[in-house]
Length: 303
Image 1 (tube, one colour):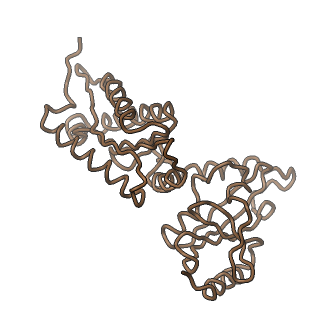
Image 2 (cartoon, rainbow, N blue to C red; image 1 turned 90 degrees about the vertical axis):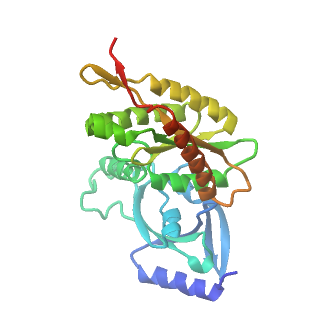
C-alpha cells in the first residue's frame, strides 16, 4: 500500500519546484503505461510513454527506469519525428511504489542557443541528440550495448516474456585473456576484443537478439525465440567460427576460445539478477573445465 496524501504532496511539490516545465506524466516503468494524477488517484491514459516519440517499444535509454533503479532524478533530451526537441526530467515516485516515475517535460525547440531558428527544422541538432542517446546505451570501444543497457533490457524482456517465445542468455568470457595481453601485448588483446565483438553482434542479430559488453573480456548475448538446447547449438557453431580467426604477428598466429554459460528464462525466477546469476555460474563451471585442458590460446606455426 502507498500513502496517497504523501504521494500527492510530493507530486505537487515537484511540479511547483520546477515551474519551467510545461507538462507532467507518471510512468509505470514495468509496463511503460502512462498515468495522470487526478483527485488523489492514478488515472490510466491508455497510452505508453514511448508513443509520443513515435516508437513502438520503450526507449533504449529510458531515464524513468534508470531514475527508479538508482533512486535519483535524471535528465535527458528527446526529439520527435518533426524535429521538435524536449527536455525531460524523471523523478522516482517512491510514495506510489517502487515502479513509478514522475516525468516533467518542456519543449525547448526554440530555446536552445544553437537551434535552427530560421528553418525551424533542427535536423543537425536532433541528429546530435540521437547520437548522444545512442552513446548512453553503447560501449564506446566495441559499439556493442553496455552493461546499463543490459540491466534495463533484461527487465523489459522479462516483462514481455511469453512461454511460447523462449528467452535464453549466453554469458561469455575469453579464456586466458590475461595471458594474451601478457604474452602478446595489449594491441593484440584489443584486436581480439574487437574481432570477438563483431562476431557476437552478427551472431545475436542473426538470431533475433542483441549482444552487450559487460566489461573487460566478458560479454552477453540474448536470444529471442530459442530455448537453451537450441542456443547450445548456436554457441557451438559460434565457437567453431571464432576458432578459425587468426591474430597474426611475425611468424606466429594466435587463436582464441571462450567459456560460455547458458540460461533460459523461467517464470520461477524472481528477477533478472537470478537469471543472470544462473548463466554466470554455468560460465564459471565451463571456465574451470577449460583450465584443466591445455591453454586454448596457443601458437600455431604458419604453414
